[in-house]
Length: 89
Image (cartoon, rainbow, N blue to C red; front, top):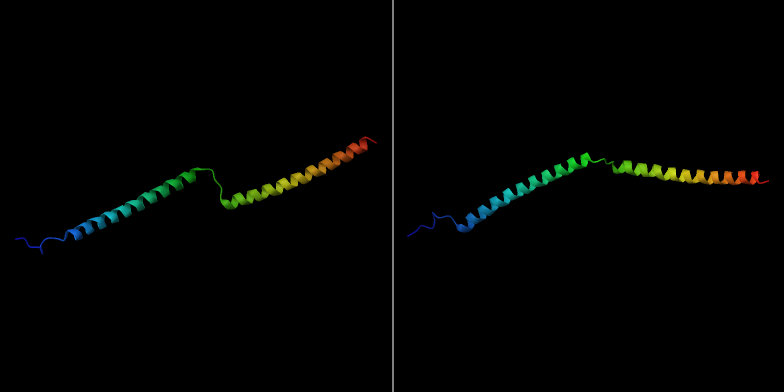
């Protein structure tokens, strides 16, 4: 006859086995995630990029510069027109 008290419960053994596997799987997933983040940071560090603030500042400078160029082009066109008028008199 066998003694059931000395034999471990199979469901408990399976539960412990899967619990251990899940813990290892989670730590592996965390390690993979950390490595992926490190690779991404390294790749981004090698790119020639600017911060969003600097991009926005440069875009504002460009808008002001374009507006000034348009204003100057208009003034030059008016001066050319006046010059042509004076030459044709």
